[in-house]
Image (tube, rainbow, N blue to C red):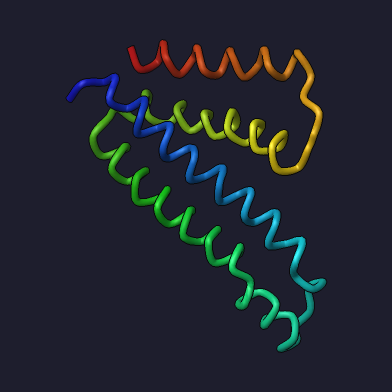
Length: 119
């Protein structure tokens, strides 16, 4: 199997993971404070962001199964770090967080590392 095929698969899997995290953060913001009450659990299970978060994690996990079955683990596992790249982009877009030049440099190093691991 062509090792460069891992890059688009890893990008998709990382996008699913980062999307799940973003949706979870939104979902937690809409939930009531934790309590062992019916009202709390209702706030969990009627929360569409929480359900969508689970779907993203589930799809990402199924794709991860495929990746680790068909590619060397030493190549596949470092690709998970791409989710950090998408997480930082999501922090800017959805949560309006500032990102320093040092963090951008770190993201570039992660991306370069993933490319060289796939080669």
